[in-house]
Amino acid sequence: MINVFFYLSWYQITQDRTLFIKQKKVMLMDYLTFEKLPAELQNIATYKDIAAKQIIFQQEETSKSIYFLLEGQLRLVSFTQERIINHLFIRPGESFAEVALFADTYLCTAIADLPSRLAVIDKEVFHQALRNLPDLATLYINQLIYRFKTIKTLLDLRSIRSARERLLHYLLLKVESSSRTLVLQHPLKDMAIELGLSTEALSRTLARLQEEGMITRKKRSITLNEDWLITNND
Image (cartoon, rainbow, N blue to C red):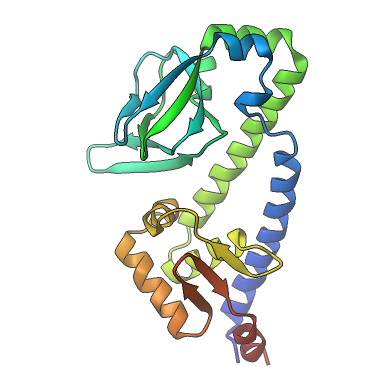
């Protein structure tokens, strides 16, 4: 018999997942990519090729531009005296450094995890375009709201003290609803960073869930086992 705490936790996870998926589908319908920018903005953009581990800009550096990631992968981080705080991965198609439009300095550091290609637009030029083009402004606001919701979801996940419950919550948010399977498009260390866990803690937790019969792991996928859930709810 499944315990009451786990049942309530599982119920909340499924409710959160339903809401998250609905919001994601709505937001991604009008997601702003570099290709959707007006031609005049695309034509004035400059391009940069960045090596892995190269810093694009640093926390508290004077802000001059906003960026679109065309290829590769970046990570936004902050530094304290004790550690690095990982905020968010940036993947192809996404913009970043939006705070540059309204602040004199960048609030975090952008580091390339992989060799990457960027499109760079002067922040004053982009700001003027937002004022003059309502459709562009709407797309951009829509993207910022989706970014805010993504960050909130990650913060909610990282607030769950149990690594086991945190990982279960994450998997339910991420799996394809039709197959209950998460296809791993990125290394496990990226998942660990998103969850605020060490790679070792993530590996141990995945192994534990597999031993309990809750998941099935393959080389590039993780599947939630529906049979286990049915059996333990009887």
